[in-house]
Amino acid sequence: MIIVSNDLESFIHLHPKRVENGVYVASKELEGGSYQAFVDIAPKKRNNVVQPNDFQVGEEDQPSPLVSLSASEDRTQGIDGKTATLETEGLSTNGPTTLDFYLHGEDPEPYLGALGHVVILDEDAETFIHVHPTSDNGTNFETHIDHPGLYKVWAEFKYEDDGLITFAFIIQVEE
Image 1 (tube, rainbow, N blue to C red):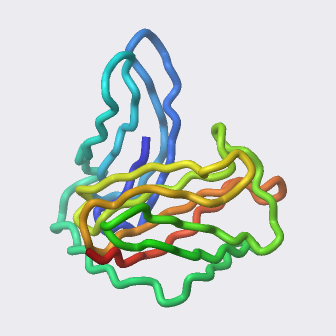
Image 2: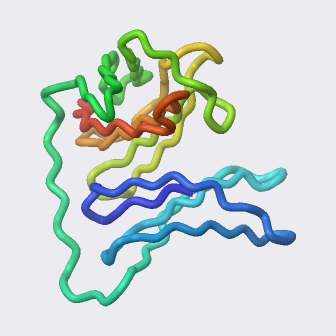
Image 3: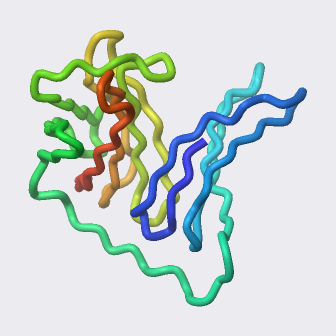
């Protein structure tokens, strides 16, 4: 399950625990505000469908801020002593979108079965994409984005000494 604040600033990736047949529970303290939860499940013998579920934490005192994204000019980020550079190919709707993350000599550890997780969300929070690396030993991701526009990309990597770090970028996808 992915929880994102309506202003696309807060990003939380949770894995609910099964408490009984068909019932899963996750707990996370959130600041007051409006959020969307994207529940990514794969029912047996059915296609996977992910739709946002809106919810409010605390009182709804004011309307949610309008999101206005602009593409990241700096594709290198440093967080807690770790650095990630996003290198892209094919940022168009005409073919695959490739996102390569250069981690500056660091080797991430497997996290939930993969060396990383990437979530891509358009600025209207209508297009949700969750992808894993294209190989078991790399930090290269590939997907297809159907509509041009601005998208927020969150890339999660787990490090032995610092735990889970999430890097966020904004990309422009052309037609």
